Length: 328
Image (cartoon, rainbow, N blue to C red; front, side, top):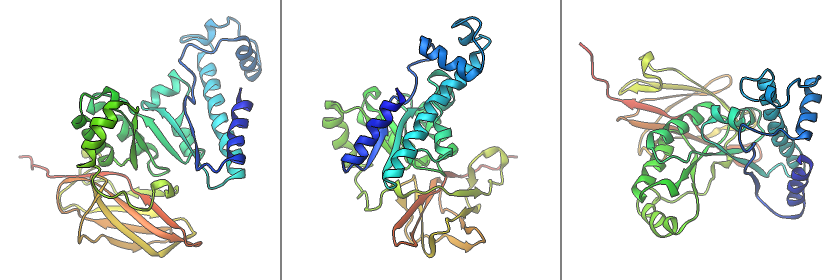
């Protein structure tokens, strides 16, 4: 019942000093649902005609399968939009987030969840993809797809399934991958003795040994970044060592560009000491030009003040610098 869920969210917002609402299970259970009488009535009303052969016509290969699938996606998306609209009307500062499947294209069909649409429409403030995979290459693939799709719109906090991983070292590999690929952070699932007794103490002395800082990625606003592609068109986002990386950024009008600070980060975390990026003013914002001094994964961080004196913070898309071996 969508009305009941919205009412529960509004009760929390009105009566408690919460910082945000996190939507979990914001999806259908699986592909083979919902074929209840109420679902049939609502779908046929939306369709404008009866379904001749219910529910077979709404199953894969059925005549109305695609329409039924889109109707289910619209149901979930409409709920997310409504929660966002009504919650923000009361508390504009409150953050709305969602736990979403890692494989976004599959999720649109399997569970009628369209996370990319929510991000593109500004209905969520950040996303927590459940990239729960034991294989590092699968975790990397999903995280890269997510940050490439919507990383310029909102923070992505990659979910790490610690219960699937054999040891703390495997967890470190996924943390490093999330940082390298442009995620704004990561989230562990789930809380277990293994996480508390083995993994957290281990990462505290290594990948999490630096101070977290005082500014959270939640200040990340929507922005448009246009990146000049690398010279080698076959390398996707990999630049040759010594090649100039150039990116034009549209800065929101309420940002005081004079206060802008830029930091180039290696592996999404480590600032390069004494390294300066060229910053040029443009009609819409700024253009960044840099030549990272060594191979690795890089991203940039911009920090400034807005017209009200609040801190504005955003990250750029991840890119890679490699040493290319000339071909004969």
